[in-house]
Image (cartoon, rainbow, N blue to C red; front, side):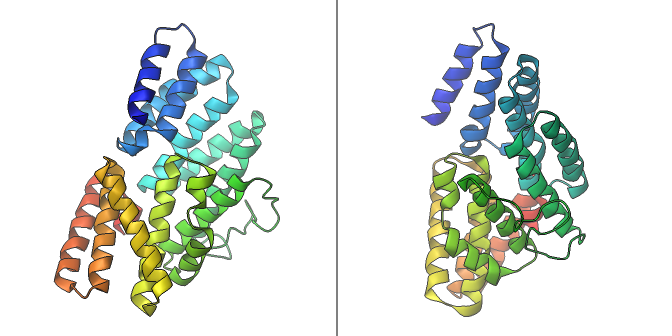
Length: 275
């Protein structure tokens, strides 16, 4: 229903001469709706060509920056694009965000840049956002979305650096705050996956009920999204099915599921998830 409404809105605005309306409609349709039924890679081109470009021509700074950040930073980061390319996009976007005084986007881009520096071993920490670009202790997290995005980046780092104990503790603490604080946001699905990675790792390691229960809840949610037609979670479900098979001591099934998950992520270009 959400996709049908978004597609109808885009068709309606195409009859209007306003590029500003077209940019705003296309941007929000792809950022908030289409990712639940189409591959996120397919949103990059319309976000950049119709969202960002048309919004800049119309002087709609908010839509332009939202399109730019989603199409050139968030989707490539979730997809596992080479970090050097994402870093380059961040630096260009940050320069533009500063020129346009787009404070919220400046903060998020800095978070991503600091995350990349952590991954490249250019910071003193692995999973804390503390460095020359962004320091979570020195920034005033004045809005709920600021805290949500910081926690999202930290969950990402915990999964990549295998700091599963910290990642699982963060997952239990924040719960589904992303879904509540920014409903429909395409990054919310990725954040849910990252929480599940750490929770399943700790469930296998210590067998505590709190980790097992929460991990199973995320697996159930992912399977629901897949059933509802979200193609971006197929490999997530495959991984969590493998993790559950390990917990159930079905090791042959787990190995098969891991291999299938690797194939799916590799074909889809999700390099971080494949690792």
